[in-house]
Amino acid sequence: MARRKRNLVLFGVDSLRADHMSCYGYGRLTTPHIDRLATQGVLFERNYSPHIPTTSAYASMLTGMDCFSTQVVALRHRGGLRGDIVSLPEILREAGYNTTCVGLPGNPSSRGFDTYLDYPQWGSWQERPLRKAEELNEVTIPELERLAKDDRPFFLFLRHMDPHSPYLPPSPYDTMFYSGDPCDPAKASMEPVMRFKPFRDYFASWMPPGITDADYVIAQYDGEVAYMDACMQRILTRLDELGLAEDTLVVFNGDHGETLMDHACYFDHHGIYDCTLYVPLILRLPGRLPEGARVGGYTTHQDLPPTVLELLGVKTEVRFDGRSLMPLIRGRRASHSPEFYITEATWMRKHGWRTPEWKLIVALEPDFHFKPEVELYNLVEDPEENVNLAGKEPGVVRMLKDRMAAWIARREKETGKRNPMVTNPQWHGKEGQGPFPSSEAAYNGLYIGSVKTAERLQARDAKGKDGEA
Image 1 (cartoon, rainbow, N blue to C red):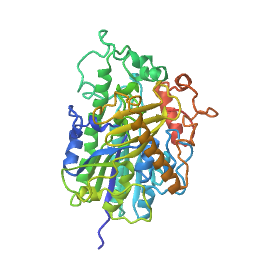
Image 2 (image 1 turned 90 degrees about the vertical axis):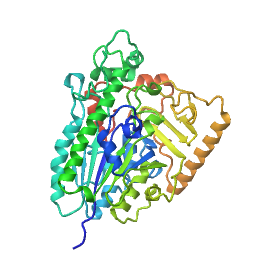
Image 3 (image 1 turned 90 degrees about the horizontal axis):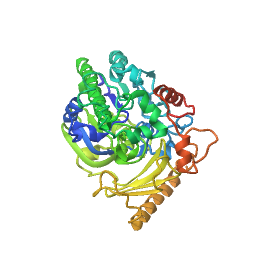
Image 4 (image 1 turned 60 degrees about the vertical axis):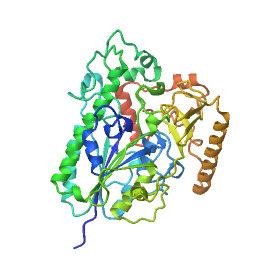
């Protein structure tokens, strides 16, 4: 009898910073169960999400293509995935897999699943605590059991939303990393946050009334990560109980990180600083992947599909932009390209070029944080990207701009498509409004609103319609 093909469980985590996970060196023990998963498989130490935010990140994660191929760069992407792009679930479905998506229904990047399931992901201060991961488990466990009974192998994709705001974890995670008074009158770190007009009403809808201490909000983010970690173990345990663990490739990947108090981008995931680009990637497949290995080379989202298909033994004619990670895992290659193009079209429209030493960020239109048009950071001497050297290092700026321009020209020639970062002036979803002429116009024109508004607008995005999020 022919051996059944291996299964695939992909944990796709929204807004998870690798540097807030204990297995990536964070000082707080936020991810003990994921840490254990890493000891059973391979952890990638320099994995990046080059295209921010969620919509474009999952487009690369689930197709193996960059933004030139997918033409997806904006959170509020119009329409579905291009017809000339084949997604990972489509490839696996063609290979005989039973495919299920939990938590990303209708998103253009999730095209091709047989079954779409959803769960509650939002809530206000009055509705606290939120139990996002438990709600996901309630949907996922019965579906996992159904898939296990099928004769076909399966692909189960899970989109976890716990690290995504609102950060309202249940007890004991809400106090796990904080014992102070979030409204301490002696604290003032939240003053600039609550003065930021585009987001302040949204923050007020899920943060404690009168909050003064930003450390409390960061502790809630970490609490969400720890809560999610505990709930994920339930799924891993059920895989063991069903006798599936030995024949299931488990992938743990983040779509993008999160800006907490970094760069005045406040508890969101816009900006192409490393706190947003740097995301975790862990793979486990007993007997096929080494245990406890750590890969130090550079990797990106588009490398995941070719790697997964090689591990599953599934052939495809698709020519991915990404490359399999197996040569890195086997020690035959040190790294994939350490330089890559980065984009963001969430609340700002910017692109740039990242090398091991330098980060160049160029604004394609004025942003609502009133940041300079060009930013340059030395990642070796200033890894937190706090000192803009653009004015002091014009030669480096010119060199990196030339490298970026050459890459853009090359990819436009290879794909026959223009760079979507310059063909998408209404990236913000506002019909009839082109690029913002000034930072003031952006500041006054972009607005999240309440939790309910954010939920509703994201739901509209999921249906392929326009709107804000």
